[in-house]
Each structure stands twice: as C-alpha cells, then as structure tokens.
Image (cartoon, rainbow, N blue to C red; front, side):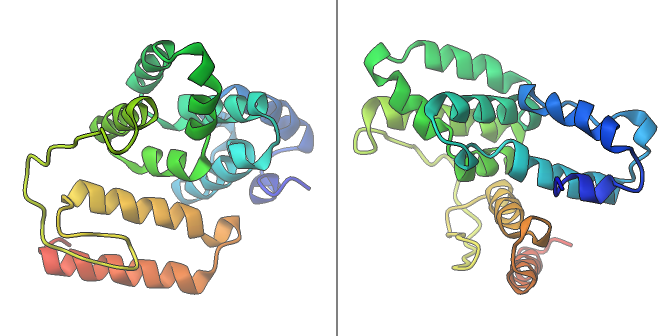
Length: 205
C-alpha cells in the first residue's frame, strides 16, 4: 500500500487517492478541500509526499530525476523560483547541461532549499548556479552581516549564521530525519532539544 495513503485511508477512497496521486509528479498545489484535513495531518502528509513522490534519488535516469526535481520545485518552492530557475538554466552551455541538472536534482539540497525563506531560496539558487558554472574556488561570497555567534555541531550551525539560516537548517534536518518517513525518533528529539537550546541562548521563545 502507498505509505502516503495510509495517513488518509479513513477519510478518502482508494479510487480518489489514485486519481490524486497520478497528478502528483506534475506538481502539487493543494489537497482537495473536501478531504477536510486538519493542520497536523496536512503537515505529516506533505512530508511523506516530499519523500515518496518528489525525491529524485528514488528513480534511475536523468530524465526521471529532472521530472521529480521540477515537480518538487513547482510544489514547495516560492513562486519566483521557477522563473529564476529557467533563466539560469537557459544560460548553461549545452555540454554542461546534464551535469547541471543532475546536481540540481539532489534531494538533500532541494529539501534544504525548500526550508529557506523565499528571499534565501533565490539566493541559494544563484549560489548553486555560480558553483556549477565557475567552481567553488572562483565563487566569492561577501558576508554583509555579522552572525549571531551561535554554534551547534548537531545542527551544523556556525557563528556566522543569521537566525533565518539556523531555522532553515533545523527545518531541513527535521524533514530529513522525521519519523513519518522512517527517521529515528531519538534523533528527532535531539534535534528539537538542540534547537530549543539555541532559542534560549538567542533570547527567542
């Protein structure tokens, strides 16, 4: 049985889910209103959809990876992202395009990008393009603001990070390790505890 359907099996018929799931690879927008899903169930179902339907690492072949990555991009990233994506991709030389697509269709990177605020999603995309076009050695990133001085080895937080980046890092790791997609509950509790520690240290609730 589809592991995503297990969450809503008591609410909709298998036929309804079949119709819905066939459309998922073309991008997800929202669940049908008549399903009457509460916020908690919606969040859990979205997490599974990300992992099972839009994970390019679960298929073989670059064409399939592209389809999964683009479906994910259209579904969970900001509205401006596809326009910027198409613009940057259109500048890539033909012989380098497959490599560019393959590296973009990395689920861990897409999970992280989807965890960022909209402004930072576009910055991430520009930085990704710069790395692929010019290489890490030639890419120069200017740090305009001082960081918060917080550190966490578990969350991958360094002293130069602003709070938006720390929050995005936490959300990314929670998506990656959540029990709803087979993650370890003990790891999830550790991530929550570490994030709460950083919240206290920064004076946030």
